[in-house]
Each structure stands twice: as structure tokens, then as C-alpha cells.
Image (cartoon, rainbow, N blue to C red; front, side, top):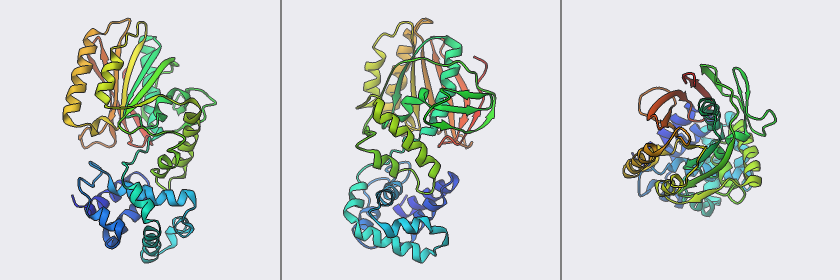
Length: 346
């Protein structure tokens, strides 16, 4: 896929996920980006520019959004706010001028892969955490793979408004209201006694606040508000996220005995990006420690990942040990806008 094709493909995804402005900007870049150092860097990208590789379109969109969030480019911020009333020619002229004025900033932003750390995915983690507590009645130890800044490591702090009322603290600083379909989730408040995560490039909720916010699409004010609220909590509580290889880290984490605890390993839109060899190592590792699990110290693995089924959203699956059981919990929108909850009674 060429960089231009990557921008057009990303535009389709942005439209499907409710960001017409980002979709339009991606199409303008696909059609008109051709001169300057930024264009040279993007169009000559060495690697897979698509969302299945380096996500170059979202790197560029993040760089531009950062200029808007900081007020570094007033003309660009004004154009974003009035984009619906502007012609493509007008919008592109402002965009091209911003890329030229701030080329050093943009080139720097292009070096880092986007990390949205979408906090709405916590809705699925909350529902699963209550289900597991109802099933096992044990405190939870959390291990998250691909944790970024650790916002979803704090899922037990957020409030989920579901079809049967509130799950989580009623005064939670982040409120999640997905469109709920399917079964009503069980209410069994979990107790998290330990949490940790790993990421190849963990982001700091204070030092990297702008970068995390910049990858939220500019016309989605509700996502920005939730991310800011979650970052405020993470800046205070500092969820521990270690830099490293996910499978190596998980091996060390699983080797720690947790008697009387349920160890929950979770990954949301992360496993699918692991190299095939890493996935195979991870599966073997989970099977190995799953074989050692006991009813007094069970192991669970919660995955929210694309499965290539052609169905909307991501598959939500739960593996349990020592039973070796795989349970389909349903499907969830990639940004957590809806959940189709199909979990059996715990």
C-alpha cells in the first residue's frame, strides 16, 4: 500500500469511527501532499505506511492536532473549528502553510507511532472484571500488554453506565456510556490488589500528555474530555507501566505466585500488532502457566482484538485456567462506542 493509499484507507476508518474532519484531512493529504520536507518524509516512507504497519496518516494527523491543542498555529485552529464551512481549497491552503511553518515539529512527530490509549475500551474491562469476580470471588491481579500510559489499567476507577445501572464507583471521574446491546452485565464489584503493564514505548501521563491528546481526533470533543480526565487520574496515581518486550515481561509476571488471587492478563487492540513469533511465544507461555493454575489461584486472559471475521468491531474473548475454557464475551467497537455483550451467566 502506497502512502497515498494509506491516507485514503485511513479516511474510510475515520468516517466509520465518527471523525469526518480527520477523514477529510486524510483525503486532502492523499490528493495534494506533494512538495516540501514533510511531503518527502511521508511519501518516501520506508516501511508500511498503513494502519496495519506504521500508521503514517495518524502520525501526521497527531502532529497537526498538537499545533491546534497548544495554540501554536492559530490559523490552523480556526480552520479546524470552521472546517464544515470551508472549501477543500481553503482548508488545504491552511494545512499546507502549517506544514511549512512547523516542519521541524511535524517531522519530529512523525518519528513516533500513535498511541491513543482509548479509555472507552475500559467499558469491556469493567464488565469482564465484574463477571470474573462473580465467577471466582477472588481479588484481582492485573497485567496489561501494550499498556501505553496505563489509562486502561485503571478501569476499576471508572464509572460504567449500563442497562442495569452503574458498574464501578458512582463518583468515578471518567464516565463511560457505551451503546449496550445483548445481555445485561452482572454486578459483582472487583477488588484490584495489584496492577502493572508493559509497552515497547510507554508514555508518561504528564510528560507525554500532549502527545496522547493529539492522537485523539480533533472533532471528537467527548473523547478529548474523557482522555483529559483519565490523564489527570493517571498523573496522580501513576499506574506502573514498564518499558520492554511484552512476552518477556509477562514471563516474569506470571512466575510470581499469587495465592488466593485471580491473575488477569489483558490486551486491547495490541496483540494483533505483535509479530507472529511473539504471539506464538505468548500463547505457549499462557498455556504453560495455565497448566499450573489452580482453583485457588486461577489465570484468565482477556482479549479485545480484531479477528478478521468480517463482523463489526473487535472480538471480546476470555480464556480461563485451570479449566482451559474459552468464553466468547461478545464484540465491542474499536473505540468502545458500543458493546454487544454475550457473556454466559458466570
